[in-house]
Length: 144
Image (cartoon, rainbow, N blue to C red; front, side, top):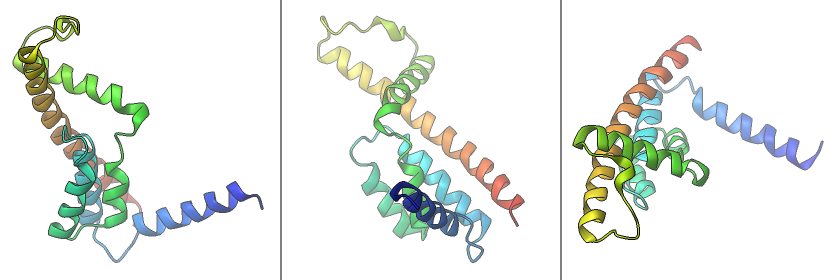
């Protein structure tokens, strides 16, 4: 057995034993995934893991599921997450998302873009968290 297959099998076994655990309720596992996704897509860059660890302790969530799902904003996906946050923010606040020019950007432009990112990120994280809760709950309840 090759090195990659050995660790692939270990990862699969580890993941499924924690994800499909029968001693935890479907609600708790789906909530763990939803909070992980929600915090992973939140606009609090650099604080996401700290926030997740605090929420795991407060709500006694499944550590593996919550941390695993919080890493949805991996570097290859960050441009898409930022674009979705900006687009949602501009839909709510108004304005044109393509109107920001970096050459003429001053503090006022950066603050406006920051508020747009914050609002869009919060809406994206809450909506994605709710959607992932119901999706995970449906998938996990069918596995019984």
